[in-house]
Amino acid sequence: MTELISRIVGGLNTPVFLTRFLVTVLIMLVSGAIVLGISLLYEGLATYAERKVAGDIQARIGPNRVGPYGLLQFVADGVKLLLKEDIIPFYADKWLFILAPYIVFTVSFAAFVPLSYSDHIAVANLNVGVLYIIAISSVVSMAILMGAWGSNNKWSLFGGMRAVAQIVSYEIPIVLSLLAAIILPASMNMRDIIVYQGGGLGIFRWLVFNNPFTFLAFFVYFIAAIAEVNRTPFDIPEAESEIVAGYHTEYTGMRFAFFFMAEYGDMFVVSAIATTLFLGGWHLPFIGGISMPLWLRDVLQVAVFFMKVFVLIYLMMWIRWTLPRLRVDQLMELCWKYLTPIAFFNLIGASVWVLLLHGRGIYDIIARIIVH
Image 1 (cartoon, rainbow, N blue to C red):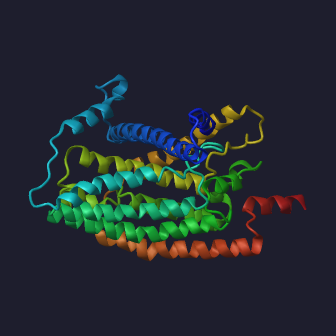
Image 2 (cartoon, rainbow, N blue to C red; image 1 turned 180 degrees about the vertical axis):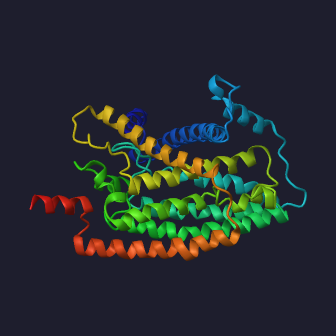
Image 3 (cartoon, rainbow, N blue to C red; image 1 turned 90 degrees about the vertical axis):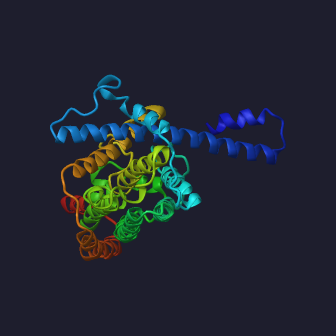
């Protein structure tokens, strides 16, 4: 794609500096449009999948009227939200109220950028990809509080305060768990981390199986990530039975849809991070050494990456429709008394493991013992 855009712009006979600028801008626009289109399609289909999973668990059919098997239900929902009246409360802080959903959605969309979908497919191959996602995701809490405060509604404010407390608290075990995995490949580049987990050992090279500490770190991360995206049983900020709907109580139409889509976008991002850091990313288990055309390998790698991500998303949906909501005190107790100490233990243990065994995994150690 880069070569094609360069040839098109190069044919305009513009100065070199202007050509480079135009090429950069066009690459950014095209890449952004592709990622935006894919993310919107995913978020729409994810709402359909959520309702189907809920229907299966509750012995119902789920959406089955609009389109084949109800597949176009998300399109009908989107059209309905577009046609809804856009209401801004009279006493609301207008600009905060308007900006909040756009910031939430933009941050969720921007988190897709550094993900490595295959060996050759990535929007931006950032050396600090993990740090970028952690940093940009923290903006969500500010945007949520903006919407909650700007609504001038006590239930929205309660939900916003809960959301900020929850997100800030659970970021600690998340970051500690990510550090426990990052110290093995010694890189924050998404592609480098996935390449580190490649090789002839298949799934045994994945960091989740590298040592006991990264194994525990994966589960700590996944539990904390569910809380980070406000999913049941950690949906305290949106508790309908307690505070109506939380920080987006006053939002209608597409502004509400932006909050809704951002939640599903965040589910994809946290699942993609878990796939990248712990589950081998786009590596093809046991067939990585087979010779095949480059385009076919990329297609298979993208398929494997998305399959792993969707399994984790399905697990989140399954948990939502299975477990009851925690109380606020139980939510904070789980974070500060259990997940955070375990995450610190995992980080120290993984550091010692790297120091003493130079990052060799359990499978490598067992193989060496058998050989000798």
